Length: 77
Picture (tube, rainbow, N blue to C red):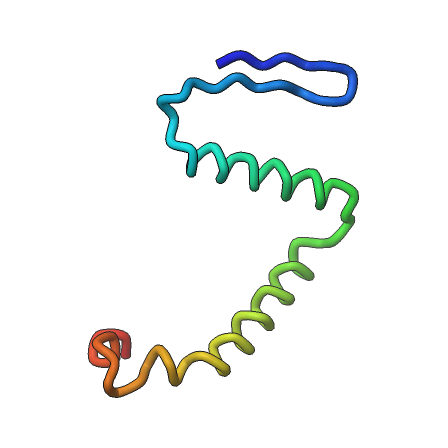
């Protein structure tokens, strides 16, 4: 692997033997870091927001997941 730094960007050369999905995961993480680099939020605030979103999602989708006709029903509860 070769990493080259230019004035405003970095260039990475990665062997083609590496799975493209793994490369995409790394690039997604770098993009996340780029987008959030200027945020100044406490981790507890992020955790509370994530918990709230998860609760709302579960309330909306739990019937689909725990449906009695579902193969998952008897194993998930």
